[in-house]
Image (cartoon, rainbow, N blue to C red; front, side, top):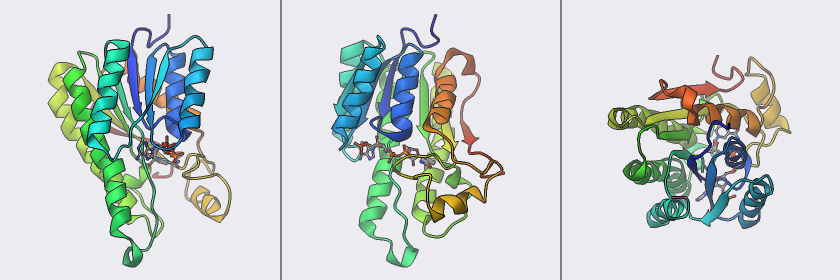
Length: 246
Ligand code: NDP
């Protein structure tokens, strides 16, 4: 039988890129999946239809990760629809790159709202409804620990913040048998970080494996952390970065 049969997963930001790959993978492993999006209705629908065509169960919910009530409502809607919540994946994220002298407060607020604040709110709401064996997984970044180019200071700040949150939250939820982990990818070919051009080439030169990762490779790791064999891993910030940080 499938490893996630009977489980329900909520993926914050599942319409494109890594989040979409995670949604497809967790569904393939047997989970019922709810995914949120803010702008990409077509992408979200495509993920849902792909899952349903393979015999799985999925719903897409428009919920801006900057909107506290929208996040809470989306989690409630998931529990109302599928009856429970076992796995939270905090994937929604934004990347704003600019020299600090020019970095706008608007971009600072957007980065902190989506990359950090939404993680806290969704984790809080999920923790209220999850039972023993629950899983909270955040998609951080290798940039929490290594930021080898200029202009990424605020992004690195946001990913370091969720790394710290992961450790603290694991302490809160450990007694209830819920694990909390942070997956820290290196460069992955998505809309956020396309695998072409001078920037991509410069990143590859910094890596042990000189190539971009695939969203499916990150999804595979998330599936392991979401599954029954990873129950002794918690409070961990886990690199999957092609040796970017080596
Ligand atoms: P993409 O830009 O390809 O996709 C971002 C996803 O997040 C989309 O589903 C998007 O929804 C959603 N999202 C963004 N803002 C919001 C919001 N306000 N409310 C709800 N959903 C939102 O990014 P990636 O797949 O590349 O990145 C996913 C995660 O992985 C991010 O946290 C990123 O920081 C992290 N990461 C990415 C790396 C990379 O190299 N690609 C490396 C390391 C970490 P919509 O489609 O509706 O806009």
